[in-house]
Image (tube, rainbow over the protein chains, first blue to last red):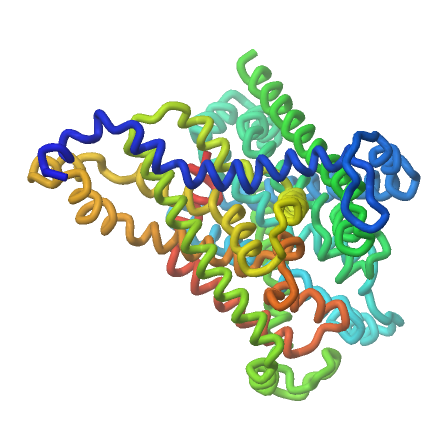
Length: 291
Length: 260
């Protein structure tokens, strides 16, 4: 290729651009889109008792999910994920407000303090709680020292709740922080000058303006909680499974791929629903702002 | 009120460190039981490095992270470069497409891959693991690199062109060297995304390709040992190294900002 040709290249070489994005498109299409379509199709297939599926079309798999056993797990997971997301949002909002209000030169360090636990291995952050809550752990030892008889808090529902909160709390901080940082500092000042109390300024200025960040944080905590399977097993003894546990069990132990696929579709639909809710909530907040 | 917020935030940030400190502290506890402190020891680390089955899974995870991280970085670089420098149509759609793995619950991707690989007759093994891990590392790599390219001063390319560099010359001698830190960051973040993944691996690992997280998971199910705390401490150190190399500013931009 001569120099003259290459220099005039950028204008006329749109196809090269497409060539460059081709591998990424291939990965997304072949390894995400097509597989998701296959699972969607499998969720309507007749299960083969020997494993795999027999094809055909049936709604039986979804009907099976209406069995109280499965409904209970779905309901429990939704409640757990929603509760966890709300607590993460509240705590995340407090932490993000504090960091965004700190001196500019201190903010990177404070963010670093949240980034380190966030990027630490998920499994390590989970089994770490056994050191604290397990038999002979810090909490039990401390309780015994003050005369309270305790044995072990693992497995327990409390340990699962605490570990879920711990796992997703850092995730909630970043989008809220970004939204708060994006707010023109003169707005809360103006609100204060106009007689708004600290609380009113938060409720009527900061909260609506950071709504997109809050919605993003909700998305990043609610949906992944549904798919968690490690925490209920390691800290809950598998007694109160989440949807994630059910999917893993259906696929790896029961080998009922059709039912497992239907369950995965339920999670996917819940994800889409929560995206829609988050988008609507953001829009409502935005329209309140302008009215 | 501001003081209350500050106090609450400090308590919450301290809370984030309680488990991490516990893991590190117990990894040095000479007593094998957590309720007794018998002084400091490095025995658990020594034991860790003699645990051949565990080391085998560590090798699998390292290889997997290197390969999947490298491929994700290359593919991410190509698409980020195209999105940034070429007049292609549908950029918004492409960006959204690359972000899909971030939005779809990981467990759904895992299940979908398992089903697809078995449909096309692929045995679970290193190849299926690599493919699965490329999927989850690609958004990270693409957005890190795209962010870095967008923050570049466009005039460096013009200057290079004015000085007689061709498109390829500009690419090799200007763009690539400037982007070296971002490429390293994209690779390290892709690597750690792969290295610590358990959900995708649960569905794509085969016999003989057990990854380190799967091994840790099954070990903890039978009981937490000081050796696992030692391993956990080393993984905390790995995290610190990655964050320091990538840089706080870059991490902040990835987590809190410019990613679309």
